[in-house]
Length: 217
Image (cartoon, rainbow, N blue to C red):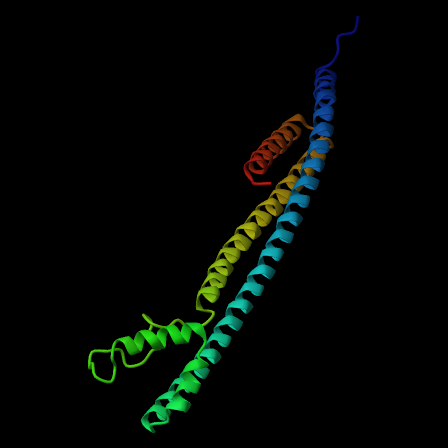
């Protein structure tokens, strides 16, 4: 019986090695394709959420600006009415003074009455006018502050969602590297080249899966 040559033995060993590598590579490529699709879907979903949060942030910012502007306009009107009231009082026109006082909005009237209780015309320590912070609050100030706070929260959430989207997108790059090395490993004839490629593809796949599992969904 003819003894097989050393070259034939090496070839048989290479064929046996390649025979079990191919199923592993095929399975790895299939799982990697699924992982790539999943990460692409999650990246797109987190991007949509980031865009939605940014839209909400812009809406809240605009609302805060409108409330502040409306409050400033109202405060200007209230101040003008108060100045007209003082002018009528100085002129001794009680009817005109009452006309302005009766038309103060409730919050302004409350501040005005509290200011009068300090006896400002006799008490030098009284507040100079009713529009100091401890007596009067500009209309819409609280609502504008709440809108600004909510807008800041939306901005933080939008940035966080954008970061998650970027991490999922980075995982698709890892899976692409796995596909490349897994596909290349199946074509290499030499075992010393094929096995490192397979090992690298498996290691990169495990790392990408671990990163994916750690990310929020």
